[in-house]
Length: 412
Image 1 (cartoon, rainbow, N blue to C red):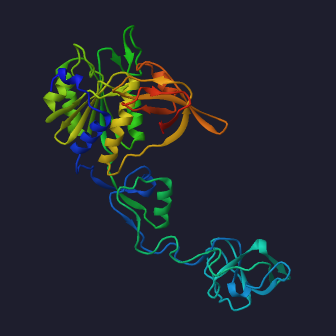
Image 2 (image 1 turned 90 degrees about the vertical axis):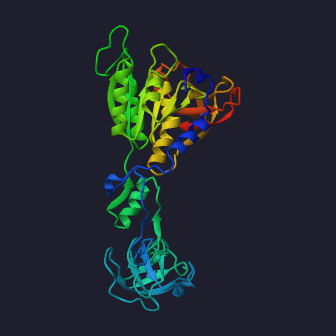
Image 3 (image 1 turned 180 degrees about the vertical axis):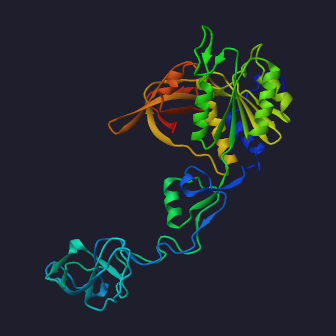
């Protein structure tokens, strides 16, 4: 592939499909991690229940354990009298059996005594003296109790392979006693910055130099997307140096990202280096995308290498739309993103043939979400920092009109 083919832009959907094809059957290895370190990880094997949940019948309300049939005639005008015979203590099994016409105090989460089949809420009962309870409302069998295995039966698959673990999943696994889980290793992503004008973020830039914003921004987005960033530093505009840095990074990591050096120009080396280094080589050289058109993707013996634009906005947008799904696939799950329906506050034209992403700021007015376009060049990082997300303008349209309902992609 030569630079002349840059005119033949690949669509975003086609680029994603090609990436998935290159990764067919490829996943990161499995590893055991402590439950408290499993948030955001992807299950590599199913998690099954080894006991019913709950494993004893328990109350879901504060009240009185009763036999439901004893309350069927109860009403506010004609309450049923029940004999109070005991109290269930949380965390302890009752040492008595409830007989007909009897009741026992029970807290939320308390174990139902044998003989009881319902719980009468405190609001519909009144204690008379020390040993009599008045029931002012009937209860049905099973009301206000959770039966054995009602939440989860013994032996069922609690969570399937490919589950991206959330705090709710962690809580469920803890309830099942799973203190270690088998997950896919986080994909290691090598980040190489290029350009003679780039200096480290902690350095004082010269008059014609720029701090390396990409390495840190892409590393943060990598972590947010489930990857493990490996920052490889800055490589100046010298082909052999970039080749050596890229080769070392690919040997050590699952994915390579080179930011800068991917647009057309005399000093751009990324395309040539990836063609020389990778086999079968570059399969995308330019995407019908704005920002991010000069993106390169290569296959390197089963690993993917991306050449991202040097401008921070372009690099972050391309990572969000292309690299995030790749990280999900490598981790054994499907990509997901948070979306929100909102009204666009201004008309936004677009260039035909390109899928365009407009940075927007979110607000709410009269219970309606509003998306305010933020216009700025791809080098304007402050514009992206002000944005809450992106709005996609499909390639086959000429833009979006003010007050149109749009599907906003949230950054987080």
